[in-house]
Length: 568
Image 1 (spheres, helix red, strand yellow):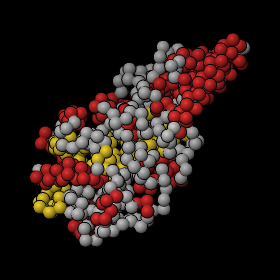
Image 2 (image 1 turned 90 degrees about the vertical axis):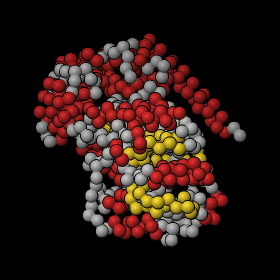
Image 3 (image 1 turned 120 degrees about the vertical axis):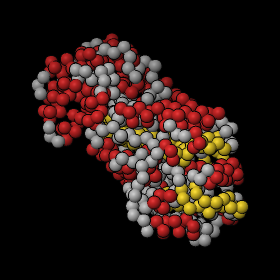
Image 4 (image 1 turned 180 degrees about the vertical axis):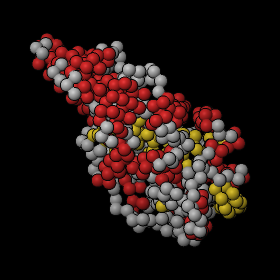
């Protein structure tokens, strides 16, 4: 992720942009309003050449009760990349004509085209809440030959490019003749309320896309489940990148999560959250800097909590949107995130979605699509938003969540933990503890049991601390997202003098993670230390041999990869 010094630069040329700028200037005549978004005003765009695109569109419209008339089919390439000529002829022009014909954009299509070949239109109103692209091409390739059409170029060399995301270019469907070099300032950025015509000037584009229909369906279902039950889980904040602004935005997003009562795991080291860290019930993830998904998140079986908001800021994070394990955006969708963003080319840090503003918008009641544009500084650039734009993660408040809790739903323990955390924030420590103890009878789980065990131990209730954990100490299996939590249980037991119990936990964890060498390499040192301490010399020796073998294999794997990467 690069970080140039950026002056505010709006890309419109003077003559070409007069209609768009007139809309913005007239907008000042109106008082601030913000209409509620509606499925009735969601337009869904599918690629008729791609059966999966149509399948996604139909499923989404069915789930959100979007009228059939709101579907627009165009025929374009089924790949992720598109050239400018193809983008204009198969996506931009057919879509603009169709939107005007169906009065989604009120006005008239003209016979003329601009120097880039885009059909011109006299538009007076934008009747679209969200334009949802279902598995359309993702990115527009650089075309040096089109630089000759540019009437006004950015000052900085790094912005003298016309490659972009498809989504970011379609956001300007209301404007005639926007130059294709550089970026445009987003008039929605940081604005909680807007004069009507300012809002109308931007077509808010969302995308439902990913490695497969099943992955995208999971993204849609994830959002709907969280809207019904409320967003349940924990936050994970990964700092330690190379620039202060990125860390500051992510930290502010994490503080917002904490303010809502969610427990948060903070990582302020240069390394990514690892196998020894918790990753259970990940409802929020904000991180940046690393190139590819890694740690527990990289495991193919890892799953986020329903409704999860998961964002990793990195250049090219969405450049391979159909590959389940490449970079970040596609893997986040593959693993069940309901809301994420990404960049198809190098965006530069200051021109990406701001996670702190996205969280602020969501907390203030915006839908996910509204919050995405509230947090995005520029249009016609490299960024895109993936997820149901109607999704409202905080639609169900905490009190309602507590009333809705059902026996046997493990996620409900995180509702209890959230309420306990908020009570502690108000210094109602005893009320928090009592609430947790009472709820543990019917809404229990390993996370709640560990929290209560720690509090029992602080209160001198050693036996009760052990009793709280006892039902969870010998599981037959655990989802990969709970391995770090189980490791913390082993640490806790050792810290209170229960070394034999701790060793038993580590023995179970090593058995459960037997097919994941990276996890075992992380868990072995603590297990070996415990075995030596308790004089289980043979066990310690066997584990040490296994660890050494895995380390040698990992080193050989890295050497082979380096050799392959250096081959011409």
